[in-house]
Image (tube, rainbow, N blue to C red; front, side, top):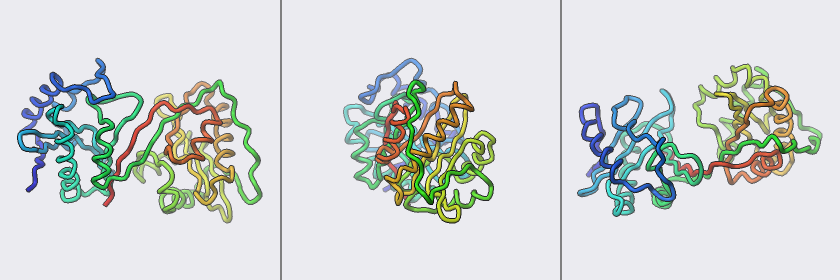
Length: 311
């Protein structure tokens, strides 16, 4: 029997009461601590942008808030999972995660469902997801991906990488290279499964490649007939420079091309925007990329796990 019910604008008042109860009685999910800036009131008001669900587990319940980044986004994300009883949280979560999985597979049309668990770093939501969720979610068929943010320390000199071997060609973005870039990031299954791709849709990815800053500063390495084997997409937002999609085709791991590409990109950015902070996303199990970033002065500051269910 289905236990999950969707919360609508008409039933939001009941949801708001439960949020008030949580604010007053819920203990922070260790190891996190509630801070004054953690605003739970956002969930008291109905919004078409979010999906609000309640899963009744006997006399208890579990609240969910899910969302898509934008219209057309094929990935559903969880921002809130809140069991009603702290003392029974393990029991409630164990029983509720299979229900939310069933709901996703039967009621939602998204291709992926992501539940994030922050391990270390800044906290946007209280209570946030925590470590105890991870094994339960994995047992229910979600695949864990271990993510990391890094920020460049400008006091560290740029690593002097070895010169590229014959056959590799560094190149800037050009319209004629676009199809090969798309092939590399979206159609090459080995690359897709290995690298950490930024949270954007295919359309947003194309929009990035229309921005002047991205066009001027993104770089790639190609082989035979302009086939892309490594790439860095650079973007700028709110005074921060983001190095997105730092990827090397797995067949060229250990070749040094990623090291060379990142070093050249940092040198370029140091001339274009010497005062800007530079950030990068990485998969923690992409050891070559992590090592290359560390050699170029990037320091990790936030770690989390994306648990992903795909149809």
